[in-house]
Length: 111
Length: 239
Image 1: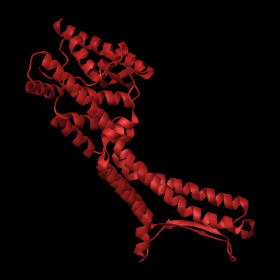
Image 2: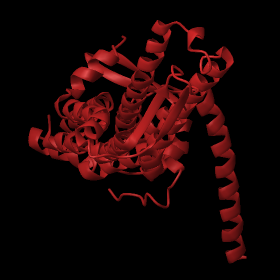
Image 3: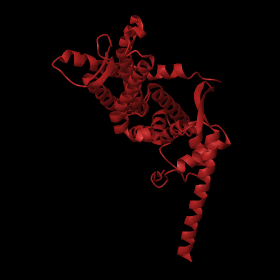
Image 4: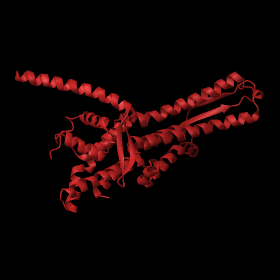
């Protein structure tokens, strides 16, 4: 599976993770599978790379983690905080602005 | 534990990441690895192929560890400016803390009239004041050295930056002096603070020793701490 360009996707992992966690608390593996499933494998990366981002989001108090024992295994579930919710709203607005701008440029090129 | 995960753990520990943080990350990676292996086994791969698949999907250990370290260092302004944080900040805090304490003593003495009339204060209090100054100085030095070592761990900067901060503090402590002169003779009492050096090298070295002892403690702790143990103690699981 081809790996996406991490430089081009700067800031996107944060937006994607916050969006998924705003729906329900998840652990790392679950998050990776949700990203792959919901993006239909368009977003692919070294799966371990999700953890530095999750720890960073936690340090920024955008998410919090809880350790839960599930099926005999201890899992770290991440969930969105109120601060994370506000950050998600801001990032969503920015993202929509970028998409609109790029669409306008692409549309202009083809006009 | 797969060799891959051990590589990531070694790399993180070498950079001085806090043991509990390393243990948590390694625990998550181990769980993720096990999930991937289970998934591969369900898809019909044999054990060896499943292990290979899991390692390939997790990505390169070096890249992952470097990414983690980079994110820790870039998470705030202090982390992005290590020269300031470890080279200048300990010195600034020491000077400010010490100057604040000296000014507090001087002002209190002025208001209470201690500097003109030694009789205004009982001799026991004088002795206490005389001892409190070096003790405060020692406490401040130790506190700042411990703080620098903890910050080096927090931002994953490793022992070299902790050493820089401790050396800066030690050098400063070696040559700085502080003296309280009691108003017992004809002159007024006063406090003197400055820098100087003499041929009494043993005294200079003794004054600079506390930050270096803190650094030695940090190195030992860093080398022999058990990350898994530290983590399990700090975060009990809930079901």
